[in-house]
Amino acid sequence: MRANTLPAAFAAAALFPQAALAQSVLLDCEVTMNSRTAYLGRPSSATQESGRWRFRLDPNASTAALVSTGTLYISAGGEHPFRTDGQPIPLTATEDAYSMCLDRAGACNTRRALSFGDWHEVELAHIDRRTGDFLVREHHYVGDLQGGGTHEYHGTCARAPEQQF
Image 1 (cartoon, rainbow, N blue to C red):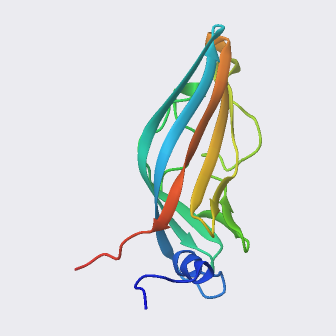
Image 2 (cartoon, rainbow, N blue to C red; image 1 turned 90 degrees about the vertical axis):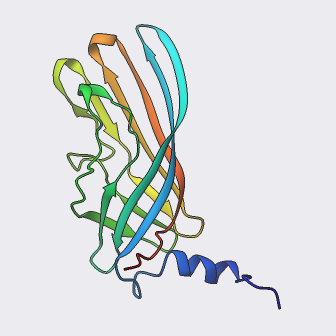
């Protein structure tokens, strides 16, 4: 018998439990940032590690919280648009994915006007329950720079290690 060989469905269930059985779970996500912008007519792109993002998911209460993040791109309005205060936000759990709105104002998939003609829009964040793949995108425009772009944060999530006392 080979050690550490679990059927894929069982392994996925261990990492991302079904909503009916789950209690609050901490997920650590190793995240990479991709940026594609065009300011003042000059296109640019960059990729860098964001680091570890930690989520607290409570499928029974249908809430999630972004507890901590790594590096974030500064966007329109001179700030990042994500809610990083660790407060609960609505969570949608399906058989395939967890989805949540990480927009600071709670208005995902909606262009939000900022000052000086700037705007940003945050798409719903998704975590695939089978693979642990994480993805969220932020689109923005900066009026003074006559352009904007997209910041994409993607990576892989797994249960956080149990804390030892």
